Image 1: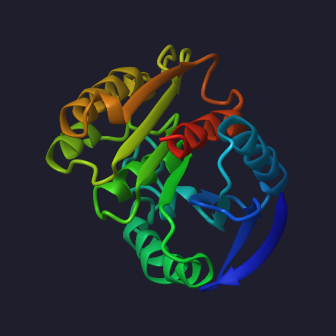
Image 2: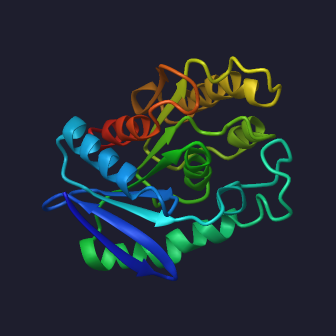
Image 3: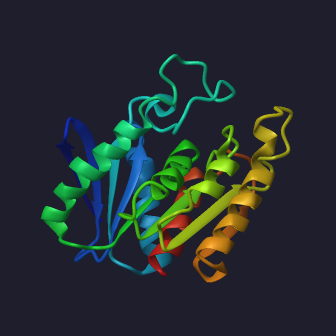
Length: 225
């Protein structure tokens, strides 16, 4: 796995590249996650057998940059949920054109964990640029997600959802809705893109269990589609 780092549009982007990639994988990440991302990329390669390039772009503040709208149950930061559109514009107008110049018109898969997974789902309702979405333990318990998803279906061809089997068994009343919300999201996807093009996988553990493994399995499923 060839690993490089580039500055694209003012953001650090880490590249984890197989030989002769046939797909582009895009994922938001934190600056400290390079080792975790390498393990993830190696796991994706082992599980899928498909050559790819994983591009992880740096996110400074997940609550500000990835939440599609404000929700005080997730964050009370003043700017939380106000720059998701800015992040999506960066991906579509800066990052993707750069990747196209390098790799050509390869299919693009977008994914992530937690708020990253939520952002990927939301992004796929805003643009048809992504062939598939890999949403591992996405934060679909954000307020108004289900009505939004009903009114704004994904434009992706395939969507992978996962959730830890302990994630809905918490005391926090807002977070414990995540199980019902992801079941409803799966129903919506089944109705819009069909059961052959979506899946919901129940993983072992809570929200903090095997994050990179969950994302790797999500991307690998999408790659094999």
